[in-house]
Every structure is written in structure tokens, then in C-alpha cells.
Image 1 (cartoon, helix red, strand yellow):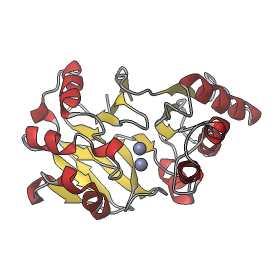
Image 2 (spheres, helix red, strand yellow):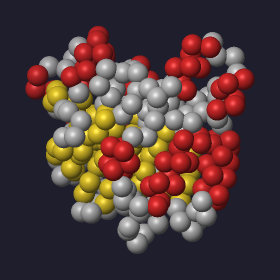
Image 3 (cartoon, helix red, strand yellow):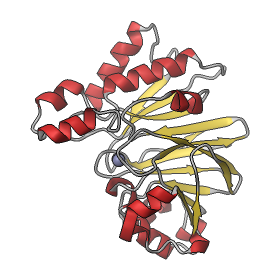
Image 4 (cartoon, helix red, strand yellow):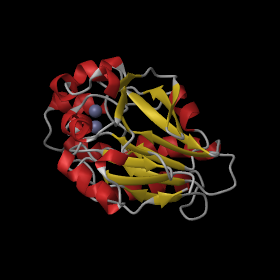
Length: 269
Ligand SMILES: [Zn+2]
Ligand SMILES: [Zn+2]
């Protein structure tokens, strides 16, 4: 195995993923409780002392909720986040002593164990949000959630990923006619909000258009809203748009959704 990926939870109420090689284990986001994190890593025969890094995309609660306890109870995991994210996390970042924190910048590439990580900017209503790509032995995983639009920088950063985790937050019409207050709807739909199913599909089309590797890429739809989306709806909208562009699931890509509180199998690359 060059790289492995597993989701512990994905959605507007809590996000946490595990990216690993044989010797390095990286938690991406800690939007679930520390108890859940440790329960979940145990399923993969990992102990807290074997967590090497925690990378955070931004400070929102659904990405940092379990941060301080997880840092406290792992012996040496280092947190990688931008200055804006750390400051924005406030009390939840209080256990990040200098030796347990490495401030990163978008555009930067750094190593966590034997995994190379590159950070790129997202467009979201957070202080300094970043998405991440993970590289090892020519394999690549990219995670893009919590962005209101897909910028050229994002498109370039996710190019040729073997596994792309991309936000499909809401179905536009469900959101528009739903019960959320007008200002919340406007925030979600803005350039600094979240990607709709339609926007996710367009992002995937562009990704497939520029894909140069031989093996079929895997795409996982992530950060689905419980209120304004369902896994079935996300799959339907995305598949329809892909098919309009003559991309077919099973032929050009593998497609699936990630859900809140559902621990997936480990995907090996
Ligand atoms: Zn989020
Ligand atoms: Zn957010």
C-alpha cells in the first residue's frame, strides 16, 4: 500500500478522515469527539500514540470539535494548520503548545513521516482555510470541502488525484425552498460558502477532463448537509451532469458518498 484513506465522519455536523501509509498515520480534521476518534482508529489497530499528524482545513466547529482532547491524549501528534485557523479555533486550540503545532501556509509542501502534504487555499468564510493533497510513491489523495467555489488554484492542486474527496453539500433547490433563514441560505450559496451537488459535478468534470493517469480515479462526495441533501440526491445530480458530459460511473470513475458517523472501509491506493 502506498496510501490509504478512510472516513470516520463527513458532513455539516462533523468531519474526520484518516490518511495513512504503512508507517505514518494522519488525521484530517477532528470534527468528532476524541472518544470517537480513538474508537475509530482502534478499528484499524491503531493506538493514540501512533497518530503522527493532525491537519486542519479551517477552524469551524465541525472540523475542530475534538481537537484539544485529541492533542492532549496523543503523546506526540503534531497539528498542522494555518495561523488563521489556529487563532480562529480559540479555546479548541489551547493544547497546541509550540512543540505540538506547526504553522503552515497555502502553497506550502511539507512532510509528515513518509507522506508529502501540500496545502492550497479554499474560498470559505473562515480565517485562512486550506485544502490538502497527500502524495506518496506517485499516488495522490486530495480533499476539498468547505469551499464556495472551485478556483483555478484548486483545479490545479487536485489534478491527477487517484482519490478525490470533494464537497457536495446541498441540492440548490432543496436549500432554496427549505427552512433555513434567508441569511444562512445566502451564506451557503455564496462564493465563501459550500459547493452544491451541481458545482461538485462541474468540478469532477474538469478533473476528469485533465486526468492523465491510466487507472480510473475514485471520487467521494463529502460534507453532505443533512438538511439540504441526501446521498441518493447527491449521486443522482452528480451522475446526471457527468453523463451530460459523457463521463460514466464504472467507466471513467468510481463514485460514492461519505456520510455522517459512518466509518468506511480503508481504501488502499
Ligand atoms: Zn465544514
Ligand atoms: Zn466550514
